[in-house]
Length: 434
Image (cartoon, rainbow, N blue to C red; front, side, top):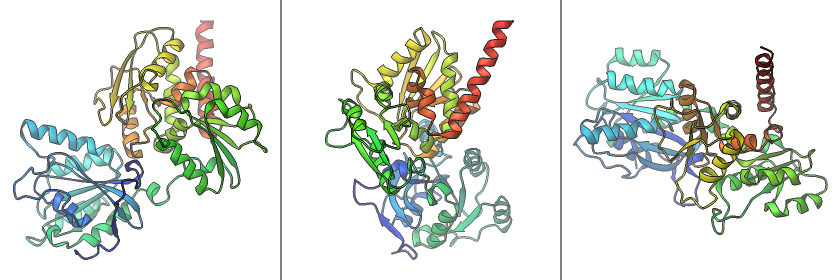
């Protein structure tokens, strides 16, 4: 066993921590600098194929592990960023997609090999505000250039020297990853716990329709239950039809009602106004992305007109049913709100257009299957191109006229909505006067 690996454990159960909750650690670099050997040394397994021939890794290879005390992580081994040819271009495109879901970027190179390729990787990571660790591999063959080391360290980037195929330097790399891990993974923010107090009761409204998986709940519902328990509160889980009966029998009243966004209207009608109400999707807008930014995005719905192009992005792939939320219900509610037909495109999984200029709005799912970095990267891309982005729950609440109530549990987001609404109303009044 390579030295210093006693703190790693393999995630053996398929019921382990979901990918979306893991810190994503991406290995980037030229072909044949030892990225795959490094990953194999880190995981103590032959996860990636190692060869003397450049370009052996064709697609991103993923390996879930436990990296204590950081916790669950996902290592991503990518194809060489300097790959060539038509197939090479496809590999490089896949590698660039991995930037958008990386929480810690590891640039792997050799002692005297630092040029435009490495600088390009560094720029891509820094543009996304991703912490970076540089690994000088194969240091048994040569010593790193002192001037190069100094130049990198002056950028406040940690440099680690390794000999991957011997397991040398792996302990130092492990410590560098821990030192550079985003704060969110050291002290994870709550999904719902900061909205309630110990001993509170929360009612979760969970419709059971054709898309509900047999014998289990979907991930947002499970995550909410666990977070409520972690904060010493309790919950009642009910279908939308029984909500009113449950509330009538609950004394004192629950501190919060959280509903599936598809049942927003009924939950709003059945929940007394004094009881705070929101949705799982809106909780995830905050937990996985930037709720304040997505609130502003939702308000762009008022600017839509017939014929405008909308992108609906789904993090997971599934077979849509007759009343699919992203393909049927949201387009229907938006069409009713706008008063005309919209041109709606659907994209699934990792697919996301580089050029968003043709779209007036991007509507994302709750992204429970993505990590937060992937959602923030998409938000940043939209912001750079001046395209507003929101998510399913916020879109539904806005188009159904219950947006203000759905935001009441979130003071900052609610204030942003009210200020923006006041600005819009003032502008409208000025336009009418003129």
